[in-house]
Length: 225
Image 1 (tube, rainbow, N blue to C red):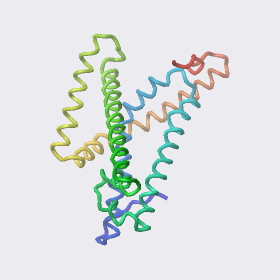
Image 2 (cartoon, rainbow, N blue to C red):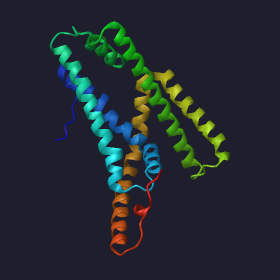
Image 3 (tube, one colour):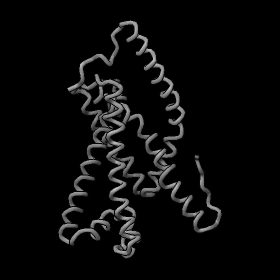
């Protein structure tokens, strides 16, 4: 059942309301705001795939991997605190440092340093590839799908604009400013997502009707290489 927690003045109520606002609602807004760019990107790389292949490759497999990661690493951190091995070091660490605190408890100093370096490199790779994909998709949308060499200046422009906006938000208010911007941007688009959901259901229904009548559909194309 869906539950909305409010701050009732107690310590528990404040903690529940803070958790809900910082995680549940924030990540709803985060993914709704990212839906246009992520959706177009997945559509580009999934062209020619079947709906089943798309659901398995873009939803089930990544979701399962995230579940395994959070279960193992998060569960380990909780266990370290409950058993007293961490001695509060993970809880006392900032949110951005809790993974590194967990590694420092589990591993020796040298190995923890190496693993922390690997984590930082992987995070940087993730951020760079995410930003690159976002800029490419934003340019594709604004250029009406034009991918010719003349679109490169547009990519540079949108990349600079993207960096300028994010940098400005960070300087203005840090992560909280980005959170507020995501929520504000996601609210109007949430209504568009409802219409998009209806549209995809209609498209699937029409494709099934075409297939039943022997008419070639987009899913019969050869998979993209």
